[in-house]
Image 1 (cartoon, rainbow, N blue to C red):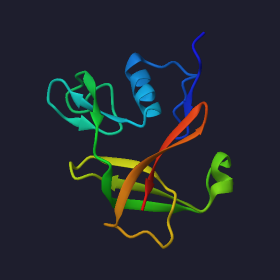
Image 2 (cartoon, rainbow, N blue to C red):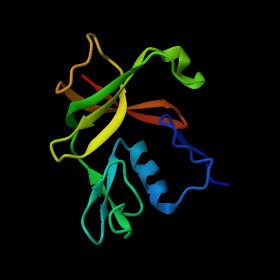
Image 3 (cartoon, rainbow, N blue to C red):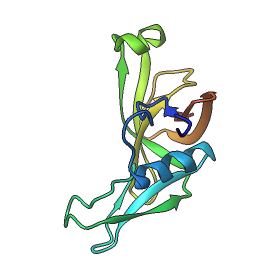
Length: 138
């Protein structure tokens, strides 16, 4: 049986994983984010999707190399789910890259209240042998 791995953001490989998603997980372990691009209409998705929302065609994975974004939106979570209750309050933010793609992740190193438009940098953290996460740093 293959080794099981999971991601901190709720992605877990102990469930049925498609080859498409398995590649996303393997690249994340190498600190690479993958986007998907529709083979028919060219629409891009981040995080990746296996099928295009617009035309329902297959999408292919491509490496996403942008690492700097601007804060598009955020929420401060005061009462989180049981698994994150010890981390409250925490900030979940949507960062918008220059390409227009957006990604949701936690901001982990805030020293002041977040402000829409502030610069963000994408970072990776290995939680343990089975868990990897991406996050925003300011």
